[in-house]
Image (cartoon, rainbow, N blue to C red; front, side, top):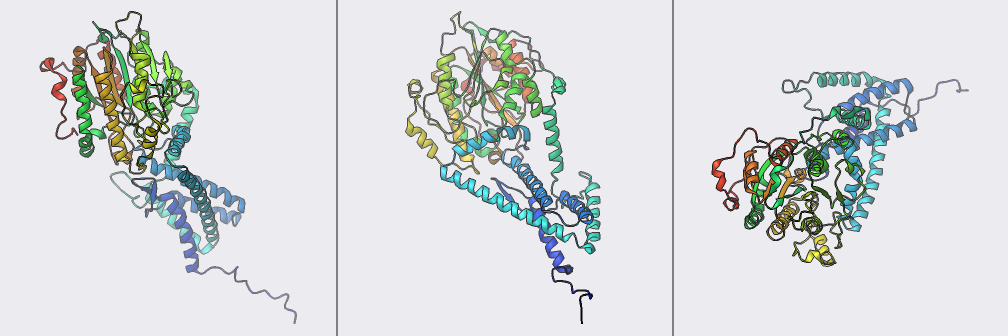
Length: 583
């Protein structure tokens, strides 16, 4: 009998799955994708940690995928590839979203961090042996390919699971319930999102808005805050010895953590005391304050711009606008009052056309300051060597010479930059004037061979702070000209790998001077004697600009008068650190 007209038996592959089989396939695919959108940082370090949370965006995506499958059927290979690429991008965003705050202590910024990502990678590459770098690249490539395969397989499996119609009403109903739970959340009142991971959508929207603000020039200066009054004449910097040189040192990664955490405070007390004693032996005084930096763990240029302009540039877009404006700065203010202005920037390794905003009379970068010694890692010029070159080229001259202009120097240091390695040895200042730069090849080799703990950098950080205090102490005691005003400002806290989570954004400010009258004006403005930070901040970094202008310009200091008992104060009274730090 001819059976050609009888219905054929369904093949094994076309049979609908059992409920258990479907549930296993769906759960596995959804679980893999959900894990990739909900992991957290494993602190300290750059690793990730599984978190039992739910991605709201993935739930919504499943509902949309059901609609697509119901309309078009199974996904084509091209659509699967597109979804895989988009999902991999979301995974990368998630990694940056959870890693940046844990490592840097601040949210990721796609515009500025993206622009400097290549430089950061070069820094990391020069801190690792070649074989480790090669192995890391191979592992990254293999890991990326493996992750792409896993994501593609999971998406295909999830889409195939959604073709089973009996499951769709249950899935859509679950998504509806989860959506209601997500929407009715009220902070501090009704926590209906406790099982959700923080969504990525707000981060993507915020970063997109940031890019739009940066790339739309018609914004103009209306986004920038007001500038302080740069209308004084620097009267307080004049004395019988002449007009004082002013050196503004942005101390890289010098944060309040060095004072606020007892363990770090006591570890640095001996070298901090040595600095205080050197200041006293040189006949100078030191006063200190606390201010709040506009950034944390990186982006030093935000602090530089904020202090020099008196305009808050914690918003990266505003920083970009500031550099395109005609706003006055401390640099232009000093230049207008007869100072030679010098940007001394050993960390500047590339053309910096934006720097013309500041209008330095001289801008010396990595290749322009004449360093002849061996390279100490990516930031190749040690801070002591940079200071020696600065002294020889700009500061070591007779300040009573009527032909000599006083100097304003802006000097961002680099040796204390993360990963706080390698650290050059402290050497005799006379050696640094030699043709070879004062260092031997074995000095650099020994520094590069020192242990580097990239994920637990606290010991390296402490060593870098000791180095900073050390070269400053020896310079002030043995080399510094008169009259001189040193303003040391921490540019930001070190990364959260050092500070831990939840640290403040505060940084120390020290003013070292040989003019007691000037020092008393700083005390009247809220500074305290010695190197130890007070518990109370003067305010945000831009407030410090106003304080410097008032003190240097001889303007009245509002709100507080100097304590008469400080008239006989000497630095020797404040060279010993307290038994416990200010907090």
